[in-house]
Image (tube, helix red, strand yellow):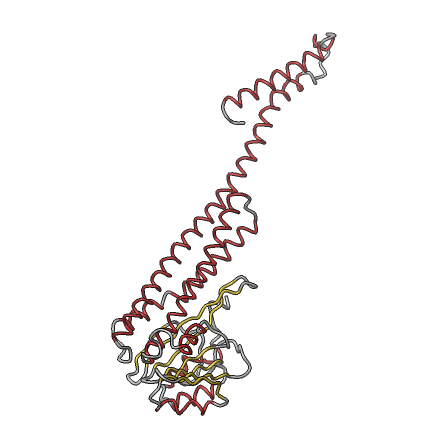
Length: 354
């Protein structure tokens, strides 16, 4: 349940706009990285203090300020004061339980997404809140920890590949969102491979561990869907031209990300249906296995019913039983039992019950 809910009790009663970090403290010290570029030049460095990024507000170049660590609310507040970010937006940034959304504030836009990873050791999907402030010439991104899915974007900026160095800051925002959505496909491929292996196990030899795996994957799928589903609405608002800072040329690229998001959601729905079918298949397999066991036991009991009847008759202690005095009586009873056994087995085979 901790994956689905965030503890908010520490925030109760405070005034709106009060910055209280809600979530896990994932790094000890806030790390600030700056990439400042235009078509001809590039500057990339790690900043020692938050004040060093303030000059980027008035620079003509595109400035990407990436802040790792949301627990230092004083640093977040100072950034907000310098870049004129609304206190409610800052409150949402430090609250890591936000639903993906996009809001327009004329001078800047605020977008929240969920950056997902697959933890192979824990065998689960983990998420990190990614917030970005899109200004006219700057983009400030906020992450919970060091490490992300944007290294290819940084490489394109360093090497000047594509149109990223020629385009504006809105194209940079598109590139970051595109990298996040591409990561969703990677996680779905992992789910697909696991479900194929699980399907083979269901057909060959399902166990209690198989049922546990099905329930775990179902829970992870629900969590995955919860993080991705609102993103369709977010990208839809960006594509429809509701944000003044997003140009028409960039909106075309965002439409492609929107299509990818819909594809992810559709694939998730299909995987959920397949997973539900696997649960039904598991229950049917167990039921069929139980039916086979019961059929074998029933056949054995049916064969022994007449044999027990014969043995019961000649096990009675009546004085006048002619067969008891007969020299071949013992062998006759055995013969009758063998004939009954053979006849019943032949009948069951004829009926295809064996």
